[in-house]
Amino acid sequence: MLVVHGALGDAEQLRSLADALGEVGSVHRVELPGHGRTPLPSGADFGMALFAGTIGEAAQRYRVGDRPPICFGYSMGGYAALVLASTSPDALGGIVTLGTKFEWTPALAAVAAARLDASLLQAKVPAFAEQLRQRHEGAGGWELMLGRTAQLLVDLGAAPLLTPHSLANIRIPVRLAVGSRDDTVTVHEVEQVAPLLPQATMHVLRDVPHPIERVPMHLLVDLVRNFPRS
Image (tube, rainbow, N blue to C red):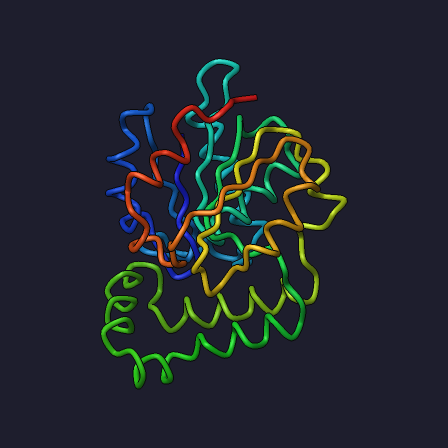
């Protein structure tokens, strides 16, 4: 199994989850370029195409015979995994997402990007800003990562990659999970997407917010346990 972090996250953030999922099988954390300790390759564009390709490379590396791995993607990591599955149908054996936002418009993207201002974060949530500074020191710095992420969101708002057509191409099992108290992703938008995927099920986690650190570990493990593989 692969586990992929979300925007502003890194592989270390998912260490506890990977350890807990060890009962399900072998687990490998994927760190997306430009995050944590993984610099952006020279000349590469920080975006969903690169992230999907990174997951695809990891999936090939950890493939067991003709069995591709399952991928758990948190937030943006889930979006990137679905983008991969929409273009490379055999890359993954299944996908579990948590807190993945599907509805992107220019207006929504502009609001989300505006929240990623480094000076604003330092002033309003200095502890979180310091956490980001330490987390992304090895990938060029947290301010650079914030700016790149803001532009990624603007690009998604202008041209979302997960459309009804691309979602219909994803024919592997998909489990879409969202917390009932998620203030980033609405239950309604996930309800709108689930029927577009040929093999999708939807799970609403009661009283669960967006930050993965605040999701009870047993709920995360339950999302993956007994997941059907293609």
